[in-house]
Length: 347
Image (cartoon, rainbow, N blue to C red; front, side):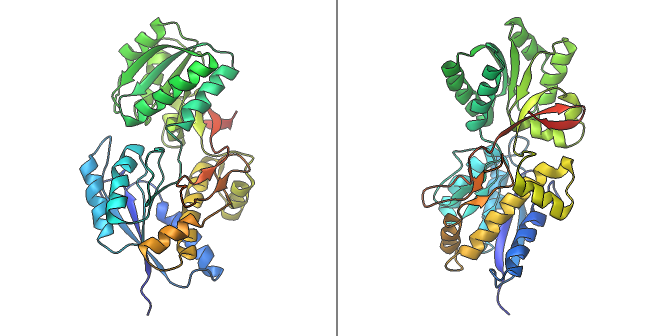
């Protein structure tokens, strides 16, 4: 019996099973699709490792989980999912010479062996947000941002784009990424008399900002980066009702529409389906296109993935890599949406 192709799954959001998410479900779906088409002639085995990373855990936990997978002879590692941890894993991919596909927002988490499926972007999102506010005719912006690599990178690109567009950032207030109280920070922002409020960060501190604004009776334009994606879970959407945010799926994407019809995916699960399906196809295609069953072969296989219609983003967004291209999504992959009465509405 032939040995299976082993793929590692690094979960940086839990310190042990089961942990959040259903990544393997999507990986398995796409692998099985290519096997049924005769493009994969071996079984694919998924090997898991857990390491609760930043901001709630540690970088060391991610390092240990990565090393555990690398030592199990996997051909490819999928993860991490948090930008801070993807930055931790990037030099590890180079050190172990193991092709790795993170699904986070850190554009800097790319390298010779580190591939990147953008789940948001610390760089691109702030540009989209700045242009959104400028299109509304707003001039003065107050910014609450995490004191973290994610928050700082978002802020850097926001400031650059705001200067070009004539937006004035009238106040900036830093938050601990796990902050549960933001009254003082919001007071500081509102004292500057902004036209709009932005939150930039991982999202765990976003409810504190939203609650403080509500307590002050401020209901002006409010927007956030892909932190708003957390509205798909628990009661987060109610807390940030009325906030615009950057999403990863569009109602007009035909690839996503076909997937939803095929699997009976509800509107509330559309984002997870789009993200999971794109991730799964990149993994399956990388394995199928590999010229040899080695880590370097799989790296070359990923480089050969081109012009797949993405389920994420607006219609026309494409998936693919290249010899010097490690960012998977090409085109208008960021979508402005808003939470209204617990529902995400495309703007």
